[in-house]
Image 1 (cartoon, rainbow, N blue to C red):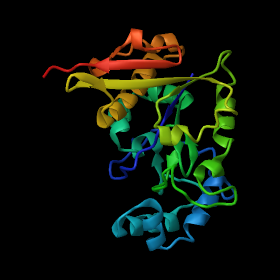
Image 2: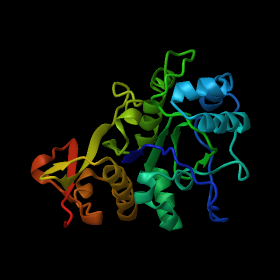
Image 3: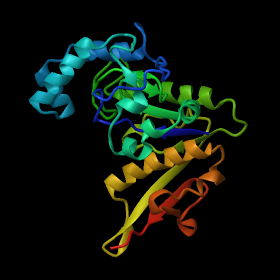
Image 4: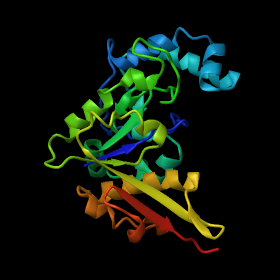
Length: 262
């Protein structure tokens, strides 16, 4: 069973990673890899073009133009950091990878996949260089008008390869719609299970973005710590007050709800 996560816009390269923590190479990096191809396209963009393309401020556009210029075909201990420690958004606050044990991170390496506009796919310990390229970016490329066309079926093919060892392959989608759209469902051979999280507010349950993002990270953390390998195990997820809404769930959609005290 594989768990899919979205990346984060916020990055943390100030906090050093443990010196003895393993680091691995991303699947689609390398001098002739897809990531390098995208960097080549991004290097052709001026700061003004990057600002318009990604709806960034001039300051952020200049920062990322600098990142593209500095990006190397292969990550190293000097220019990169393990992805699960470098990403620093709401999802990764819930995952809290820095408090996972080495054995837990090893399990995550085998079962968690982070989707990425630049890298396509990342394992938790893959080296990540600083970048900004959201999957929904309309970056024209030889394969089409945007990154969905660029990645095509490559991400699904990778997931098929990773899940091939399972007799009944399952992908647990904890990613956003923007990122999961990059997985070609026609090419994907695994069963997909979506996990959704709702909180009680103003007299009804609803998806609240911040809490839902954090809950995706919490679910990934729970799965890692319990070494969950079947969908049935996920029904027991209970971190920070969430519980399965059994009557509202289905085999392909697990809905978890929380009603916090006022």
